[in-house]
Length: 159
Image (cartoon, rainbow, N blue to C red; front, side, top):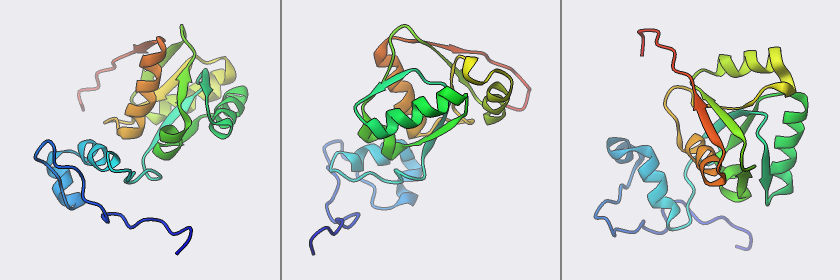
């Protein structure tokens, strides 16, 4: 059928490293990021819409006018933005060299930064506890462009 999407699992993942999970339960045992990375080598993006990164005021260039436009429009108003793994995987985002990208753990920090500082806030990426593959992809874009990442650790005793 023309225009039909290939079935997930129609092609087996490579077994070069001797590990190829067949289900999400098996993947959880070794790590979801590794599972997604393994499937990506055969062109299958798993959960590319349900995995996202929360960011504020990112100074970027992108090969995708859509994604660059979203980022620039949100930054112009100082509004947080969720970028899906799908957007990050297809956009070839490059954070402007020399930029400072701050990293925080809690989405409430992003909300308060947007509320109090708006478009004047430094660039901010939220890891939301344990960084997922979308956050990893966004921070990888940041690290290859040469900006510095700044983190502040606040110990609450809870973790």
